[in-house]
Length: 226
Image (cartoon, rainbow, N blue to C red; front, side, top):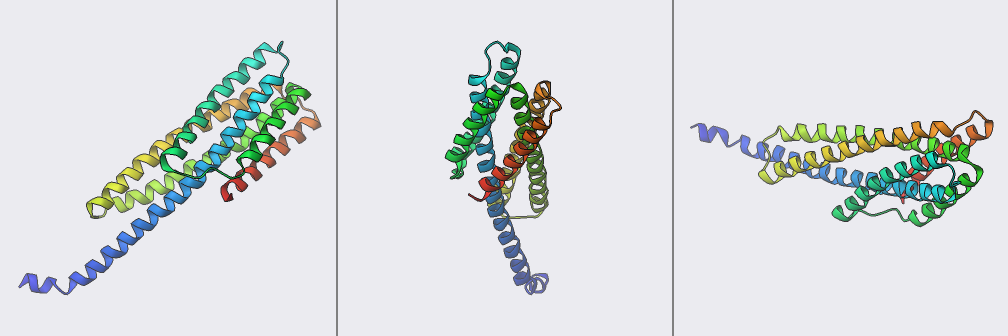
């Protein structure tokens, strides 16, 4: 008797499970699109940071030993960031920005010119860029936390094994990415703070810092789209 009574509910249950399955699939697609954008932008930014620092080091007065040591330390960390995003691009078959060749030419030019103007200019540019990138990474951390919370809500449902396994896989992957971005954001902040030893209070330095922030923000938005 109970089996007969349960039959009218079966189509309804099947309908809701199908809707949930579609929602989970759409969520996976949305996460992949967002991860593609985030890693594409991050790769472009870290490549530009590496190019700027290499040009600044090559063009800085060799007698500025302490400053060069600080720049080399920044470069080592930025290289680690770059290697991570290059690996993510290869592993997940994401698309780098088509603007990468442009950013590399600009970055090398910025590094060379600022070093020729002196350490005040070097510090102003690093301060402006790293401030913007740190905020960019903090925003990505919030995005990761949002995706994880959505996945965990779905994970509480009784889904088919394949969907449940994919949810757990995405949660682990996004958490690992979040931890990396947290580390990178902290290191960008340390670069910004280290650059303050070179800053002065001149109007020119303030303008250069503001231009660096604005240019970095524009480059981020363009790299997201292209």
